Image (cartoon, rainbow over the protein chains, first blue to last red):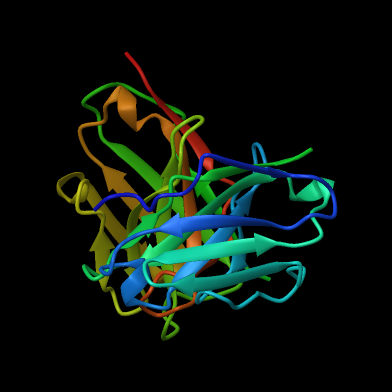
Length: 110
Length: 121
């Protein structure tokens, strides 16, 4: 199975909104509403930010939101803050009953 | 409070077998719908899903690594063990275990801190 495709980097100024895409196929992202998003700061473990495409776990800021259209899922961070600078990964359930992660996106706050 | 912690060797030689243990607390692997997965991350690279075991002993493996992986659980000890055979330098990575609350579709809500495994002669 191939990794889901994410842009290598996305940047924005404080207060702006940015969107990270996660493109798969009809066998993963497009076929199921089981996309998660993770935030990872350097040297730290990933943290779940969004699950089931658009749901936020308790404690995650409502500045983070998720959506999906066709084979592409998206994570939007609104009101960008310095603390949002991190790597972000998507993941999806697949038709083969396996899990696949994205290639990762480095978010830089200018 | 759910916590997980990975343990095992930090250095293995090529061709050797790696055995990692995930010791967890705050949940039981005998509870319906619960699973523990393994994910790795080579230095500076992306996350890669490896394997997962569910409460009912359902086991799933990455297709590309399936022949080399085995995952088992010891419910009484609150542990999950991942075994990877024929280790190679490209397997150098931080290995994470994570709690899956979904029951079947990989919803990793809690992660261990990770353990760095280097493969070198």
